[in-house]
Image 1 (cartoon, one colour):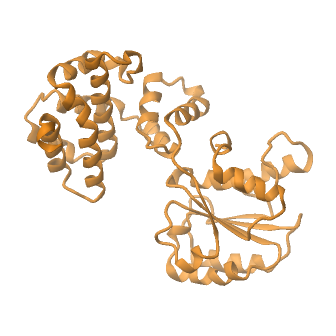
Image 2 (tube, one colour; image 1 turned 135 degrees about the vertical axis):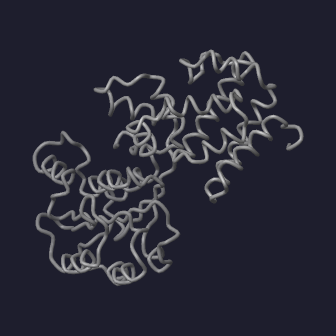
Amino acid sequence: MQTLLKDTDAYKLLCSEREENRLNHAYLILMDDARSLRSVLTEFALVFFGCENANAGGRYERIFNLIKKESFSDCLFFPKAEKKFAVSDVDEIKEESALNPVEGDKKLFVIGDFADLGVAQQNKLLKLLEEPPEKVYFLLGATTSYPILQTVLSRVKKLEISPFSEKQIKSFLQRNYKDQHLDQEKIDFYSATSNGWVGNAQSALEDDSFDELCLDSFALCLKEKPLPVLAKKLGESKKKREFISFLRLIFRDAAFLKSGVCKDCLLLRSQIEKVKKVATMYELSSLVYAQTALTEAEKQVKFNTNFAQCIEICFEKISNPKFYE
């Protein structure tokens, strides 16, 4: 994870403020990736204590290993791993904040996802954030800032992490899943459909719905059955976002093939014959416009629009792009 984070502005800023001895008493790390949030907070905690180098040796290497295990006495994680934040956690934080650091000159409380805390819990922590005891610091994590009280937001320094590039996600998967000897096409696919977040790519890869998505998506694009029948079936799917992403890749590859541009950039290489059929069935203008239509469909799905109806309208637009442009 550090390899991904080290080039972000948020990570660089915290490193700089630590080196210049001007750490803020409270930071809020904003990152729309629930699965990765805790490991990201761990990496920032390592920076906080100046032990981000795993091979530093001596005391720093020991602290590095303890923080990674969430067992360093001056770096306390809440809630406990795999647990939800509880009222008792607030009480424990208040009690611990009154105690001096055990080993160094600062004590850090790491809390994520802070957006999960209720109003009452946030208010109970507000006074600590307003007037933290000497040597006490907070590192809060959140996937979104909307549920967080404005009074809390006004007392923390926000560090936002933007989505990573497809290339960065791909490199992460190759590094972290190298022992599984994954098919490169699947790595390319999950990187391209991750929306820039490692957690999305990991969850999809581990679930591995590639074959099912492939079958259903091409059935729709090639109109193997009447559109309402296919749309209804897909409307029952729990992988709506992944399905739309797969459709986007099919039309992308088909557009490349039809235009004769960048044939080496195809992601669905094992499905080349089906992609060729899609390229033959649609005009180039439709293949290009499909990206716009699918983006609109994805937005509508987020607002709980009927998925089957949404897909039908989407393909009507793709078939007649000039009418909708």
